[in-house]
Amino acid sequence: MSFSSKSKNELTRIVTEGKCCHRAELSGIIRVSGALEFAGFQKINLRITTENPAVARRIFSLIKKTYKRQTEVLMKENKMLNKHHLYEVLIQDVDDILRDLEIFETDEDHIVLNDVLPAKLLKKQCCRKTYLRGIYLGGGSLSNPEKSYHLELITHNADYAQALSDFMNHTYELGAKWTARKKNFIVYIKESEKIVDFLNIIGAHQTLLEYENVRILKQMRNNVNRVVNCETANLNKTIDAAYEQVAKIEAIEASVGIDTLPEKLQEVARVRLENPDATLRELGELMDPPIGKSGVNHRLKKIIEIADKLPNGGKPL
Image (cartoon, rainbow, N blue to C red):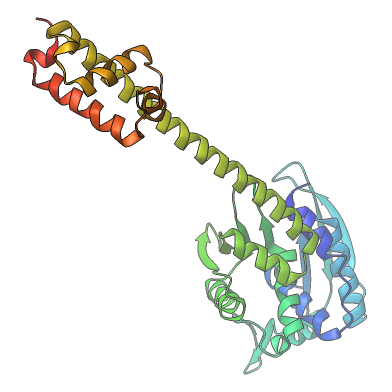
């Protein structure tokens, strides 16, 4: 089961007692996943579509609790994706409900779709959270943190997407942004810490814990990989440096002989030839008396400088 399905199944099990929260959650769900159908003079039906049966049951329950209205739930095949069923909740004659949820407003006897957030429904802190929960249930998705950090909310209006992202950022500092995608407008969060904050706000605590576990394991693997890559790079540098040192010493030996070097350089040259795979620290411990890593490095650099000054870099012609 995907993280989106797990989180939505968890959210549908949350029990909310206040009617204000029921209305806020319904307003969020309908705003992003509802479709209006005109069925005659001043008669409007509402059809809410979802792929999640638990969400369909949640909508059915909220409508019944809040407005005592009968609803019809239909199951259809999803011909577009050819893999999931679609669940449609049909509510007839919903003009009064849409006005109560601030989805509609009246402008000189005309019905106008409200492009801003429902200010009256969002006065309480509990209702702000349940409104975001409703939007996520209606049009949200959450990617697997193993692959990427991405949470998005699908809306159908640019002004509303802007208002929603502003609300999320001003109220909860979630770092939300929005963009157009085909005919929709997507409000999204890409920072893992902010996604965790959002899940906490809407009440998906079990999903949050699982998400955090996956995220921490992923970060640990990435850290281990970085350390291994760093150590591998350092090892390669050490091997390359040792190969160059051995080559320069052999060039000196072939050209003028190691015995022509100063006594201290002779010793480190012979130790390096006898131990081509040793580190600088290990070479220093083999010296008599032992010297530090920096001392060995200094002497080897002197040897390389001497080799470079020889004709043809010390190589025999």
